[in-house]
Length: 283
Image (tube, rainbow, N blue to C red; front, side, top):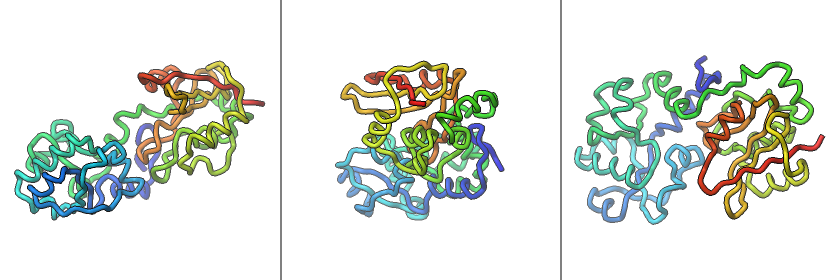
């Protein structure tokens, strides 16, 4: 069993990650002109939830067209077309188009010839040894989950308000969807919330019913809530006590339910236009 971001990962989940990072067919986003110039097949097929997060499809301009290509179909195009296609994904802000420089030491020179020598896309042929790639890919920007550093007395002190916090801390979801809102609610004992793509409205209703405005970071059960200028909730976390906090950075399959210090989460979540509120959970 390997570890990613300080969390044990089963072989089964590692296999699923390979499928989500490098499916048999992946979406390439192009303009109508690019599609015609490169003679690409077009499709209205939508990525599933996992691939949506792999390729950041939600951030891609909806006016673009989509071409689903297998590795063999992609490789059959002339290098000039492959290079243009990969560069277009960077321009169109599709995800999973890493730099050759960042991965050459792991993958060798074969990735240089895939496109323009500067960028490439993931195929299963590059993931023959996934333990060399996926822990780094998924864990490099997350920061290690520090759940093992939390003293037993802190877990005991949090148990009344957050009966499932220790159970959830240091775990990856089974796929995309489970998010920060569901993680906080599940830690507080809401059954099944850890598996849902929890929306803002049910989270706000739970918060109104379960907590009072105001709170302190050093005690268990303070819900940290970040809101945009329109008051829509953007992120949430919950304190465990003694400076520790539980949160899930996003709804992606790549992000775990992890423990960090309050200071670390406040730094990582600082975003222009967001403001932080604190809510104290009811005993």
